[in-house]
Image (cartoon, rainbow over the protein chains, first blue to last red):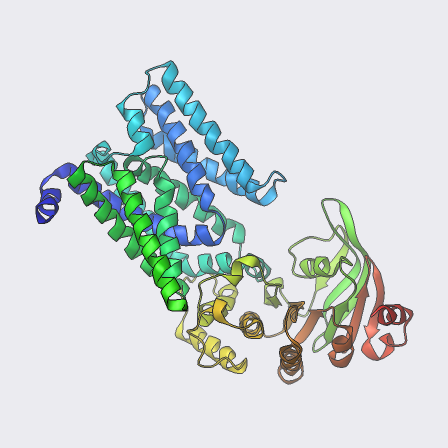
Length: 272
Length: 233
């Protein structure tokens, strides 16, 4: 175990994975609390599939994956929010259509050109080897931006999440804060996708806040605990993945499931 | 002086009229009860007054320097709030956000204001408690404290006693009456409870897709609209 921790600090690819993973876990858990409470959890899932589609197309076109996927996901996030607010179809159906549509397009594009190769496998299920130095620097910059914006708007995001009608009535532009939330989520999803995989990134958003809400009663404590749970689960998952040569994303999700179950048991125990 | 004046207002959604020919004025210090059956357009009127929807015809005029954001609003509770992890203090102080401009964090004066309102609502000592663990009556008082923090002039309450037991309902009515009489805050309340409306309000607005009655409560009792409505009750 100690040897594994020492290894992380000596291998540069592991070090990169650790830095990026911790930052993305932080972003995901902060945003996750608002998304889960607003019943927007599935937006993260929809965006990750769209991200996969965009990355697949970028790979085929030989473009930089992140440079394509981030704008595409941000635009999709705007659209999904609009569908949620305006459309008669209902947000959940809109998300389902978008996410399976994007996944299908991604797979079609790949199978017609290069065939399913390691890159695509990595986008689906994640890999800690996927990150190079440029990716890492981009991830650090973007995560710091996401975290800063989140803290600047912390009080307003709380107000809009708790009671959108009241906020709107008292003159807060709720639409803008929903947009900010969607854009930050889109960026976080794309950043985390490389490591977690398109199929698992939304768990990084949902699990820590679910766990935290079982244990905590105030908004601030929910946020703090979600952030801690998220980072701890990520590091534990990374270690397991390294020690047992298991897929990174899946290892992290499994750790999160165990923690969520433990939190559920603690909550039961308390209420008895 | 009139705070809000409605002139031939028509309100609705997607081109369909829900309420038409609304004409009334609310003066500073009034206690107006909006009554009417389910689906009569009471909530639609509230949305119009808060500028959440625009009138299809006519004008809603806010005067005496009243801004839409200065109307403290107590909405009906949503499903999300029932399981929301937030302390009472966190909920109440969010009422201050409308007056903060571009500032992002609360000042110590704003925190003190919030504590004052919590105390005024009889919730002192509970400020760290979780909102979802409170009784229905306490939750309404938390939302009332938040509304009072957002305004010093007018509060708008949408069915504030829905789902509360008779004792708590009476307490809440007394509290609202106190806010109106002692703090001089204008009250607009949507209510199903015609008897409480007659007891506390100064003015009544009776809606049924159009305006059946508007005027002083004393005159309402003898009006045609009231006779029918009270007979049904």
